[in-house]
Image (cartoon, rainbow, N blue to C red):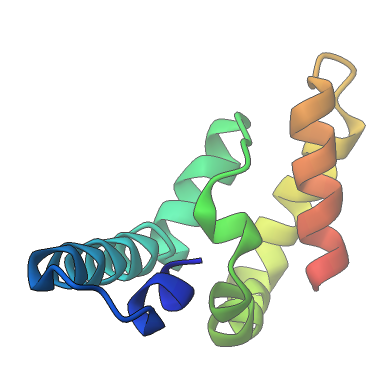
Amino acid sequence: ALEDMMSYDWMDEEVLQDVTLLRNELAANEVSSSTFDEYCKEVLSGKLDWTPRHKSTAFWEHNTHRFLEKDGFIIRELVDILARPDASQRELAVAMHDVSEL
């Protein structure tokens, strides 16, 4: 949607500058929110939510190999979340999604 807004011929140059700034800020936020270390902290907390890193194609493309680190420790943690009787529907859905990405 922002890319479409950037291609529009705005009469007010400030609007284009604001749209460009917004696009750049969102891109920077996605990168900073998509680190593998932050992902691991979230998984280890057991409180999974639909944060950007779960939905980011770039996150999965750049980090899939890291799930094998420490003998697949994070994969086992995801499986443990799936087996927890007290896991919420959202936590189960996110964990299942993440396992399917692998």
